[in-house]
Length: 165
Image (tube, rainbow, N blue to C red; front, side, top):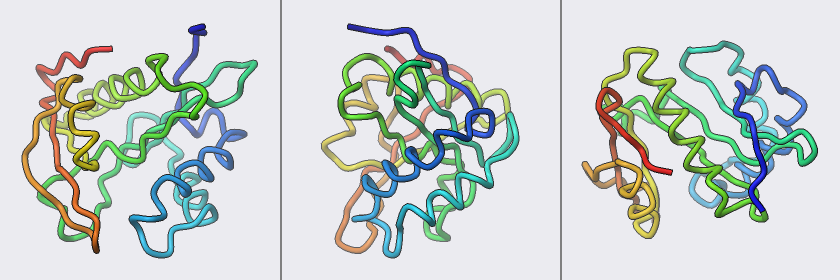
């Protein structure tokens, strides 16, 4: 059953930062050496402004707490700077997947980037996720390797993007 949800800036719903940080750390620690919940939480707590980079958005339903989250980042590793800013760290609670939450977070991230005057927004993902993003208007623009992990770099034109649900 689909439930209505709201997407807010993380700085407006700080009570969900610890659980979002734990989910992001669990999802991305295999890719980023030294990443743990405390490091992610410290980073999320710096996202204190609306319509600014960096920022984090959290989808939530009052009765269910947080449902998912995504960040917009401009502080990427030196080897990825040609592709900044980033839509990053998209996570949706396992039991909430397939309900359009991820798509809504992506759309909102693109809208936020557009409002900031960002022409192109980038992301990188595992090759098996490229189709998910392509179905939402993203286009492959390169490859990225981090250690043994190989990623597809994708971008979206924020001025003409019409991401689909």
